[in-house]
Image (cartoon, rainbow, N blue to C red; front, side, top):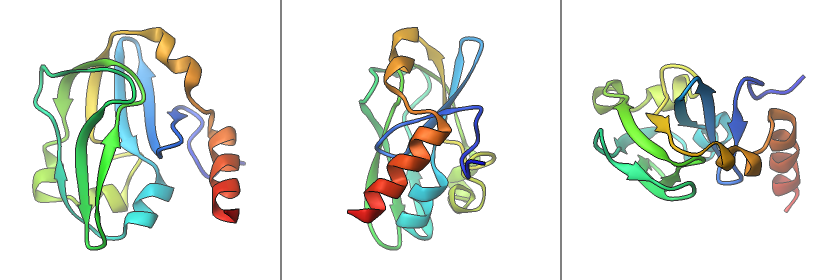
Length: 131
């Protein structure tokens, strides 16, 4: 049983995407939020911005560091999680639910091919931890 939800795909830079129809919801993984520590600020793009897969789309600032976040897939931003303006800690508390970052109109299905399943991501995190 994976500790990562099976209904989404993951990147080696610790983001996730869940695609429903033509919309992809993006966030960071539980592993990423644990590594970051307490999140104090989230900087996200504007609705309407276009991004390629792998492109930086924002930053997450924690008590430890500022980390860039990258899109797993290409798309147009159709919604940003406005809750995170006042409650950036939602990223820590619920990274797969209320702590999502942006929603995209997916522009390329081909991007999904390079992403990891939950089981593959879990294995990647274990291997990374071994150093």
